[in-house]
Image 1: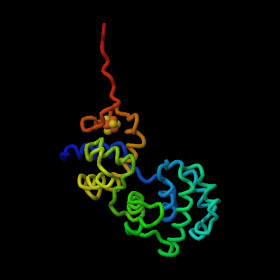
Image 2: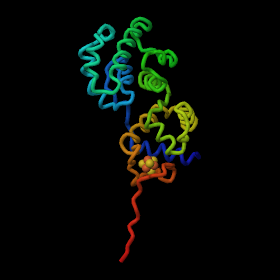
Image 3: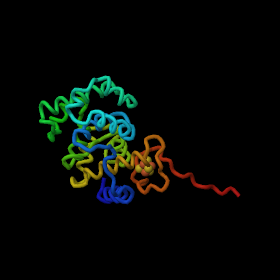
Image 4: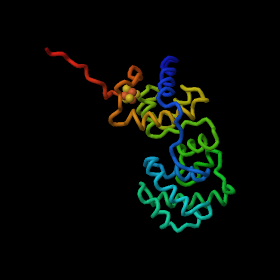
Length: 219
Ligand code: SF4
């Protein structure tokens, strides 16, 4: 990828998604951690529907750590994998109290030792709470990275993240992560991307771009 293509991508994202950020609702650090754990394989909107109720019913970490598992399950039952996620919430609340004085840890390896927290979640937490330059590769970022020719479709998530970090400047990582998510979520969809008018068509590697068919005058 040459410098012109990199600049083109950044210009496009800045023009269309200038002020985007985390769409998960939270007020406290641990609430974001729980919201991100809940967001695995489900939408942020679904998570935002249950977290205000969860955090109102159990307003602090102690309450969550001692909450009956059935009560947590009942509140979050509208989202996927709710039984497993309910267990994660209870266990990680206990661990935060016992091992981290109620604080969300900053260290990546430490974060990934918490239940339900993988590298992607750890990157989101580090970027959002601690402003550490990280690029969390979710399904949208992964798809956009190969469509825009930065990575390959066959690359692992780890390699995709590595390539993104190599191509773009570090001070753009956090913003770029949010911009790619918004682009993937609202325009460059997995199945029917809105390609009409997309000025990244010349770079794009998606073989089934939804381009306008030329109008043929048969008269
Ligand atoms: Fe996405 Fe279509 Fe633009 Fe390619 S041309 S980046 S598939 S919107």
